[in-house]
Every structure is written in structure tokens, then in C-alpha cells.
Length: 119
Image (cartoon, rainbow, N blue to C red; front, side, top):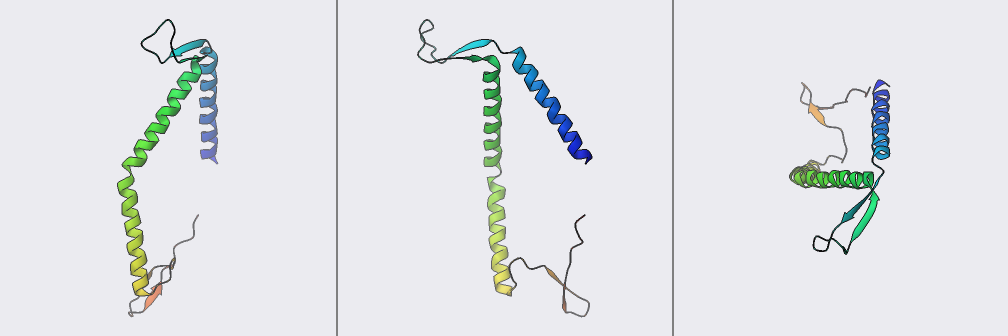
């Protein structure tokens, strides 16, 4: 409950900061992508300044997410190989997929290990 309250407060504060930023930077800015002809550029975009900033932040988040995803490729491939190996071992032992693990008891018989209930 407290975690939801703190999350809501942080998100409300972030939303208020973004709204204040947008209101403070609503003047029109011209962005030109033609470095050779300043008098008559080929591609010009005129938008409020906060839209350019929000677009750059969004592009940075997407670029960072892609970089993180590519950097974790090694771990995803290892997880796929481990799952394939687990499926092979279960098939060899005759265990059902998704079955609970078993552990040997003191008398040598296999006993079912039941995990504690989730809180």
C-alpha cells in the first residue's frame, strides 16, 4: 500500500514538473536540417521547444533500451540453452514438464518438495 502511494506521489511530481517545463518553453523554435543553405533551407520544422526536448528524451530512452537489450543477448541465449538442456534432462528421466523437483529422503525414496506458500 505504501509502495503504491509513494509511486503515485513520484509520478504526480514528475507530471507536474513536465507540465511546468512545457508551459515555460512553449515558444516556437525553427529547426533546420540543411547546413548548406541558411537563407532557404530544404527541410525546416517549426514547433514549440518542449516538443523537441520531449522527442530527444524519448529517442534517448529508446536508444538506451535497445543498447541494454543488445547487451543482454548473451544472457538470453544462455537461458535458452539452459531451458533446452533442462527439457532434455527431464525427457531422459521421464519427469513431466513443470513437475515439482524431488529430493531423496533418508530411506532413499524420492519425496516431493513443496515450496512454502506465497505471502
